[in-house]
Image 1 (cartoon, rainbow, N blue to C red):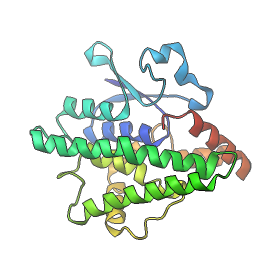
Image 2: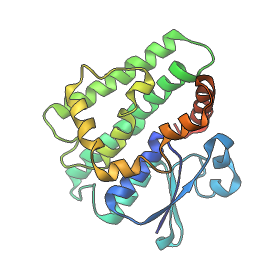
Image 3: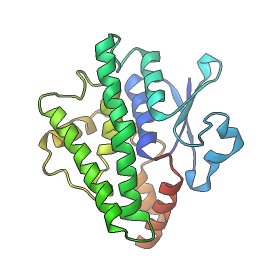
Length: 231
């Protein structure tokens, strides 16, 4: 059994979608990151970096794994799926996983901060991160022009990039110029395991709308969540 410590963020979805796709049994330990519970001592023993997601594999003497990319690799290897065993195939998947970890995720995260949540509108910063996000989405589009998925068969590389790329509108960018990216997003979004994983630990959009009494309250809650999340 896998204990999944998570919240409704792109990095959190990477873990839950992976678990759903692999068919591994897991229990959800939802963390309200707006309260900084992820910085408490008990959680730092699981993830020294104090961010989500993280897992504890109770079948392996409580083995803990943090960092979403490392977590995905661990789970794929445990199940023997979504990550090729041959050297070249494995490398291709990990390359595109690192593309998300080092590029798409951080740039979209910064675009979110400066476009939606930062108290001041610093246009050069907004432009810088939105432009880089658009460039990276274009890289995905070019790769998908002649490939159904990013690295051969459907893999953890697709899951990782999908969970971030699908939130493009939140970063204030458009994907109209990227038809291959649009095709890929639509295709993956229809997978039952993806649908299930995106609702872990809850449907974020529905939860935020239900809790917000006004647009400003919605923004404040979203801002607080973003500031405390794993990025």
